[in-house]
View 1 (cartoon, rainbow, N blue to C red):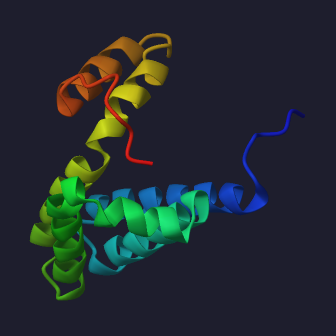
View 2 (view 1 turned 180 degrees about the horizontal axis):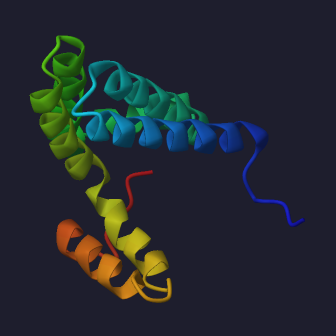
Length: 139
């Protein structure tokens, strides 16, 4: 079996991020269950920290261009914890789009190779990101 280029802690971070995504999806499917959304947020942040490191994570969220996204993301988490899960999730989703919007064009390039649905998903991701394929990546 071929090995991945990720270290062991980064592989664990990918697992945490995936678990966070599944919990967020489950929280939305369970009509914005507050506990599942909160767990998804925690797992996602832990996974991101394990993948890119503590200093790079702090630098990513503290960048001047990302302040609006960071504020929206944190406000969304706070609203979820304060028992406003629907509005918290919407505000958090806006923060995620602002923070990670630069990555959507990169992801669209990979997803475009998937057989039947790939081109449609790639087209949607490029529209969301504003088609900034060669933009400077934040990390």
